[in-house]
Length: 463
Ligand SMILES: *Cc1c(COP(=O)(O)O)cnc(C)c1O
Image 1 (tube, rainbow, N blue to C red):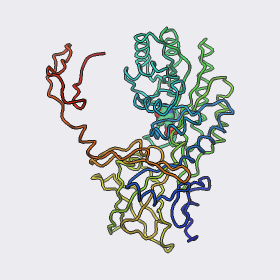
Image 2 (cartoon, helix red, strand yellow):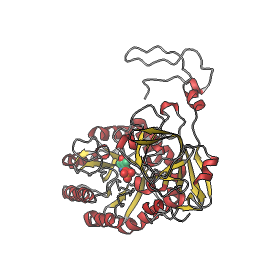
Image 3 (cartoon, helix red, strand yellow):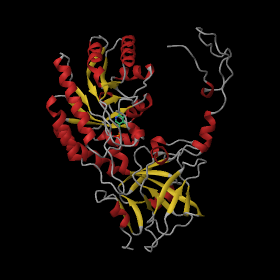
Image 4 (cartoon, rainbow, N blue to C red):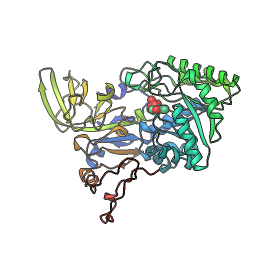
């Protein structure tokens, strides 16, 4: 029984909350197989302790150099997870009105919420200004105008920073690179000072600083150094022009360890911040998403069928790309653990793991060290706490995946499965409407609506 300890060792010694005990994989003191008897697979399962520890570890490295942390909600937007972080004093970085409501619902004060994103609607901007958001990171000249107009309409001032595109390659996967000059994100660094001056002259805007976010899953620290140095030069240049720049938001992007790569060194990350921008006297913020939650969650799945292929055995799982999109979207390969310690330490076959979705990209890679597998076996995709559940969909009309939180010797569901009956309810057809001629407001349905909220007619053209 003590023989099969490779898996926890492979995962690194920094995760004492994830261990094989009495032959079964445990998150903290809870055996995952026992959770799987109560909650049908697939489900995500997070360790509260892992999330808290990650936050405390990062905070202890960056708080002493004057940096506050805003969690990037899109990495894991479950309000129970947000609540854990909020309790520790963590702020939030959001990218939509929906995420704003989630952060507020989790008890995060608006004064600790930063609104990022390249395509905010006026309704989202208005809601953010009304609740008293900490800042809106604006990504274009057109958005500056929109925010100013919305604020004027509300009779309020909107706190903004300008998101800068520093033209730095984050040296990560192309689909998660955000700061090269052809990227859709941010304002080209050469245009920032002029726009900043224009925005600062608008009475509706409180222009508070600049922001940058160069990409995600970054392991090589040198792009951070280059980007932060460019930001420091920019701040100095703008101040030389008489502009006031009290805030500097450094974005997220810190990578996490997987099987064969050690994680970035947080002490080095903090040292880079101190060296590059520490002297500016700005209020500094970082916006990590993945780093805080990525290694704190697993996705538990059952083997439905085994199939012998020419290239070797294949295991068909009850988890698909709709539940965990990263392999199909970013070529990510998540480590996989068996819930029972592998039955054999003899050379077991390599299994390719695939999902049930009717797409050939619905595959997770080829794995060894899973032992001899049988239908009904339970597996867990590791390092699935970030961009897992938050990206899940109901494609193929599959249930929206459940989420479970473990704390000590207890667990609870923090998102129940959304099943087909709930999906079908949203698809009850509305009333037929006739499109109004251009320039005229569409009329609401002439008949009174008698059959409830499901058929609320859409109003077009009001502001
Ligand atoms: C996605 C995102 C983050 C978080 O990225 P991670 O790689 O998860 O740390 C931070 N800031 C902004 C603006 C983002 O879009």
